[in-house]
Image (cartoon, rainbow over all chains, first blue to last red):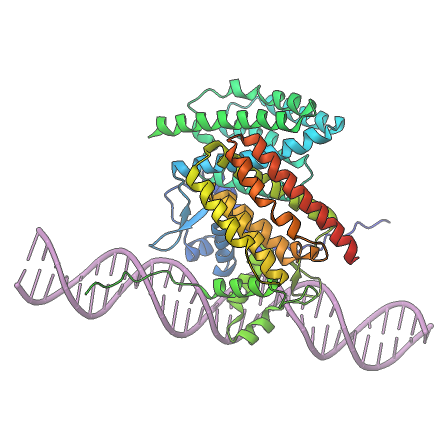
Length: 221
Length: 221
DNA sequence: TTTGTGTATACTGTATTCAGTATTCATGAC
DNA sequence: GTCATGAATACTGAATACAGTATACACAAA
């Protein structure tokens, strides 16, 4: 009888709370004007305040929550200049990822990226959220393939901030299906083996996204 | 009588502990094989364990500390591949900063950068630590001038990780004065107004640093 | 000597309590 | 009605206590 190795990793309550809060924020369950109060959340979750506090402080550290003067935390509201800066940071991270990939120009990796794009662009769901989840997966796969743990971490932080502010979903008034087919162009750029060319391609892609973003923010205002 | 506005910002004990620990780690006061135990640190600092724990968890979150199986935390030891990846991440952040600066090509900003370089390259201290502090200041000024809060934050995280592992100081066996004069070349590249050219310049600069880094790590092994 | 078992110790994560601070609310004076 | 003041309330940050887990150590058996 072969016994499976038991996974020893204890999961902290604080980690569970963190994951749940992040999911609730990004799915819209927690709305942008809601105040997250330690004692109340602890009561709701039937746990003590300590792990709740740890999770909230971590979400604050991640830039997702902001503490308010009346106590509690709320979802960080981004200024237009923060939005622009976040897109620039995206360009830094995703741009470097494609530079690395173009320099490697590894057939297996390029193939894996194509597979992800094909799978995710074929989502049949009509929900905006699924749409953006697919978009996120494509971009994340791209960064994953760079095999750089720090770029992946930065990517996640950027997108967590953006998605938590409902940023990337803010452009639902603009037709996105046009830019969806754009992803394959990134693979093609990587396949040229030219890091600069590949990076210019993704910067264009991201800059275009920023333009759509600002249009959407104006539409909503 | 004009009364000054009183700064209301309460500083948490946990923040103070964080700052002290980070400084102690980066200055070498805390050595790389030392185990940081919550209860012991709390006793030493004459405070309760709670803020110590919060600070340590945050340093873990920042990638600076790693928890050990015997309890406690120790300075994260980087593998060679982590070192390489960290330099790539540096290239992403600092590369984007110079792209932004070159696109702007703002005379005041370029002047400010030159001033920082001139001041920092003229340090008279013979201590290696001062040398690297100067180097860090030059690079940080460059990223600050991009006026992008996320790039600055990423920069700090990268350098905190590197400095905490005593990474950038590991190359003290190699003569650095040669590469110090290299910084002015970065300003000149920015002044061409060509983002791609400027970024290539800093990537060269950073890649050269990585080569020195690996030489130094071999020398030490 | 080696191996297995039980106990002690070290440390963590969580729960609970205490004390301080900021905001809100109620009340009285003008 | 407006404004000032004091009390109540809400919430946080830190201290303390409790319980669980992992490691180290001691001891006995083979």
